[in-house]
Amino acid sequence: MSTLTKPKHIGRNISRIRELKDMKQEALAQALGMSQQAVSVIENSETVDEQKLIEVAKALEVSVEAIENFSDEGFINYFNSFHDNVVTTGSIFATNCTFNALDKVVELYERLVQAEKDKVEYLEKLLNGK
Image (cartoon, rainbow, N blue to C red; front, side, top):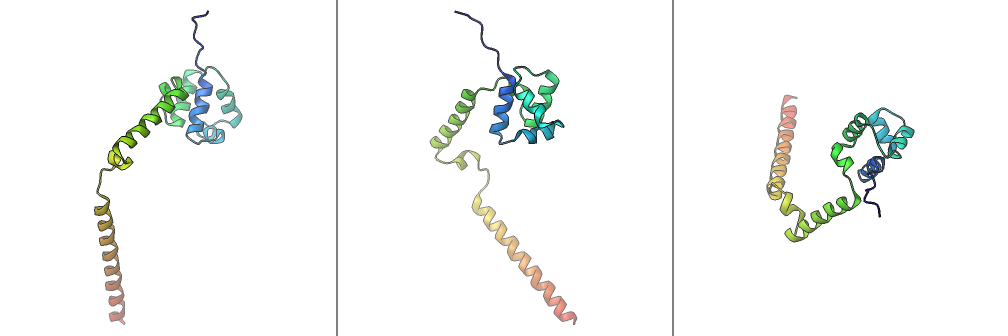
């Protein structure tokens, strides 16, 4: 039995991250200033040179380490833990909402009322000017 571990396929990781970001090869190619075929070659390569990997990471808005260490299992675990957090708190807003929604509605309403008052004032000035 061999104790050697299979090296990570960097191109496959790039492909999976791109797909998870709902990005087509053409879009990544455009961001990198290359052809779609060149992106396909990168995604089919087991290794990618360091400079190209940095460029790809920047285009995908992830770190080089995220590409190198990407795994489907880790990704699934990440989102499962996110889902578990939402379930235990009872609401996604319980962990992310930093403002009172009712205050925002009142603020918007007050701005709309003020805009209407401004319109009325402007129209009255126009009528009085004639």
